[in-house]
Length: 256
Image (cartoon, rainbow, N blue to C red):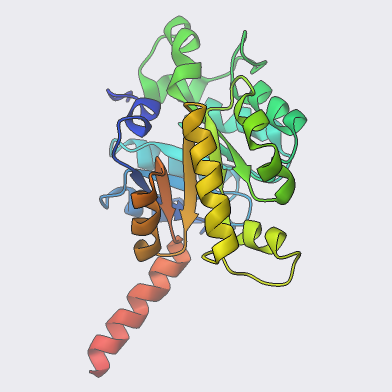
């Protein structure tokens, strides 16, 4: 059911939101993590093995405990963003937004007119929100968040222009791909000095535009650093990394 305040309002409230990151195909994984004290759950369809059918099953499990579900769509698959919004996600993260045209197409599929061109079919979202059709239509653009991922030199160079696109609510930075791009493919260093400089720049531009800034963190410790920087949302690790960390900790304790 729709909660008060809305997900966008919570993102703007000041305290950084910490989200779980799920790519495993069993919807129960997202449901289990939603019951932990995360603020939201991201379902990764780009690099994860979870697919559309599993996401449809995972969304109600997350929403049932009062948490927002978000989805990261595959590269360039803007049309699928509308389907996930119809199913009830509160946010869409789109990778490799490298041009203003990319950002415009993304916004077109995620926002209803007059901002975008999203078509009607939000039956899952209606059920989960508890809103009537007309009320949902009038409120939907303000209830969901559209994130454009900044992962390349090209995107970083035009971050102001991407942020200025109507319907783009904020940026989501992928530090790993950004580090590959900034090094010209020579290395993977998401916490390197050049990446840190790029993060600070992108974050400052988002705040100057009064837009949201979110980011992926490989660990809880790194998430704390990024939260202190002032990001509105930080996604922590992944379900696979958490499973491995839990296994390592249990075995280390057993063998101590």
